[in-house]
Image (cartoon, rainbow, N blue to C red):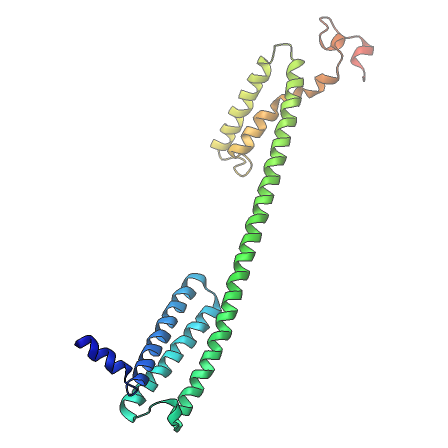
Length: 223
């Protein structure tokens, strides 16, 4: 019986303006709250403006609800100054809501597009950087292999030199020198490049490089 009474009351034309105004006021205020919460997360100014429009539109519906309850304002078709004024305001705010909501959607889409383009650009830069680093390491490995081939101690001296370079670089950093230059990556690169200090051996003939006795004036001159 209670459900029948409520449904029957709401379907009564006398109560329909109250129901419409109440629901519209709640939706307007709730829409303003959602738009305001979105603005706090996104900091998009259009969201703040949309929240204000929702709030004001909801407030207009609240005022219309008050006029219905206490001043006998009824359906729009009944006319009257209050009806005309309230519906003019509601029409204006509906148009503003549409304009700002459309602008907000476009702004969100543009922001996502910019974010995607930036992430894609960063990925390309990171890929190019890693590719360049890989090429450098491959070049260093090839040159180091050539240098080790020309080393009389089968690479032992090169390994010791690399350990000396690492120890010196770490000591400098511990003592507070060249802190900007001596990162872990930079020290690793220095160690990997250490064998290149003997890269000139590659161009020296074995007859001169591995000669036991002293070099002649011709051999010690420019090659």
